[in-house]
Length: 84
Image 1: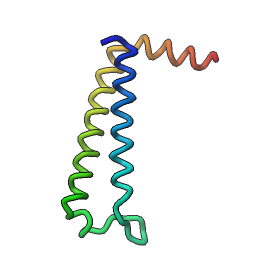
Image 2: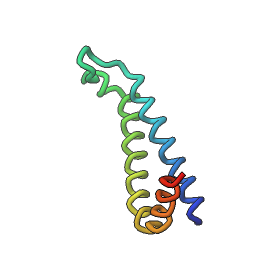
Image 3: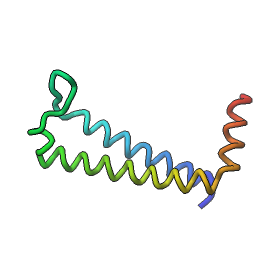
Image 4: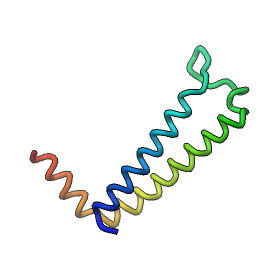
């Protein structure tokens, strides 16, 4: 895959993670902002939390490889963004 294709894949992974985070935010929270244990035990919450964890792990693993493989391109992109 080219650098641009990898960047698009990264954006897709980030969008997936955001969607899973938004889904987790729909569950009720207590007065201190903590999700109650009975909600955490529900199958719907557990499925959403698993989806979030999987999405996060995929993005983390991708970024670890991507930043090493495309270090020069990322540096050049940051430099170009700084100069504009």
